[in-house]
Image 1: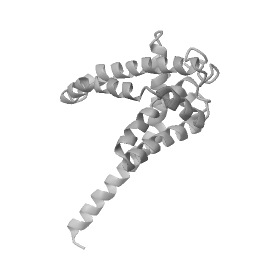
Image 2 (image 1 turned 90 degrees about the vertical axis):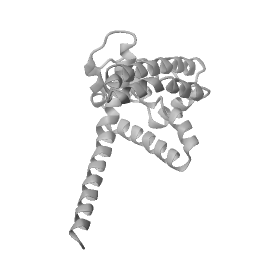
Image 3 (image 1 turned 45 degrees about the vertical axis):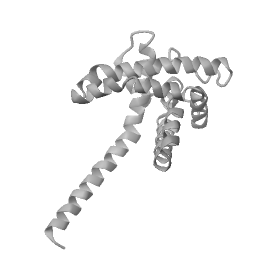
Length: 193
């Protein structure tokens, strides 16, 4: 084999290792930070809260269960999108409330988190899609500023908007009996700082 073949094989191997490390970091660290970030945005929507809340996903004693729940959510999203594009987009919205639910109640079962998210998004997927479309201009502005606008303004704005959608959907499922107040107690209960 020529030296060039070995170089390309080495580059491919290094790329594969870097991709694998990135996936593992997303699974074991990134998803838990996502839960903490959702808790931060939920709390911050009603009162000033500490930035340390972002690490609450690691401190709530449900690390393994929450890692598995969000891993399965991400796996289902990828599989649905890989197999069928449009149903993948639908499932992406259907599962979009899981991290908010886990931020509010880290002890909830995986099955129940998926059920409540599905119920929350029943009849709301199109509205959520249109909501995401309304941020296209901000996303474009973020791209042309190399992410600065996204980091400092549009991403927090989008997440804060999605928290408000979550709150509306939360009240909907509490009102129609699809979920109980014990399952969705609110973020002011058992605040971890």
